[in-house]
Amino acid sequence: MIQILQVKQFNFLANKRYEEAVKNYEFGKGGFPFRPMFVFKTPEGKDRQRGYVICKENSYKFVLTKKELNQF
View 1 (spheres, one colour):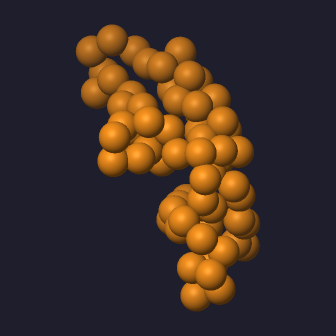
View 2 (cartoon, rainbow, N blue to C red):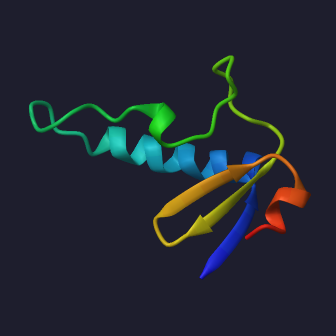
């Protein structure tokens, strides 16, 4: 099932998943959760505020415009 979210909403939900991953982290068992693996960021390192995320099962793709959404 494909779901389309605005990137602001996706990043909000992704931050919740990141906080949960940090909370459940056990010292000495694997790497510490890395926030940029959870959210979409700009090249300057800030959270994206505009654009869309296409969600398919466990994969996510960022597109900047609605025109790009039509390609999927």
